[in-house]
Length: 264
Image 1: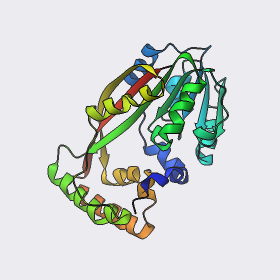
Image 2: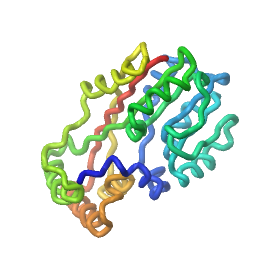
Image 3: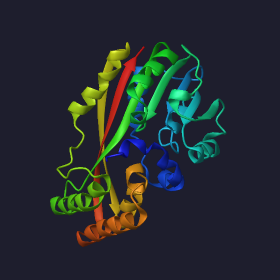
């Protein structure tokens, strides 16, 4: 059975590696948020699923009061160590859907590669209820795609996913569907079902280059990869490293960052 959607808590077991390997987000993405809604010292903000804070600092720098809602205890401790010196920063350890947040009280709620863990029918109505009138919801994510510049390497890695990942989750083999602008547009329209208006989306792009070992360290921060039985996971990662090393020792990741914005 494909149980990947039940894996949200596994991130917390690799908090340090997650903090080291997961990327932040483009400055242009945050500027697009701040162009959409003005955030400053008098603003109250909630971040949903902060992880180790890849998206937290640019918002904190506005001087706002920021509440991070983070499910993982290790991540929550890390967030306080990193950002506890900022006036107005605090952490709620728990799920967003269970967090005690005042209605009609927040100027911005944002979530970076995390809101997919919150059930839509619970998450969007709660965001709407706790935002002030005119407040904004910013949902964004990083969507990596590997080896576009090396089709042979990409094919080898796809074959390894069929042999290890797909078998681990008992899912059918097939060509992976990469993230598209059409998908970003589709996500952007979800808030309309829950009363939001002024809906828009934007896309941002970048490339990252990893050695074979760095790349498998990155894979080791993904909940669905962490949950694969250890012996199988180690063999899987070893073969990915071998493939990369046979193709020059580096792998290029092309990131698409999608930002969806909506207003109460």
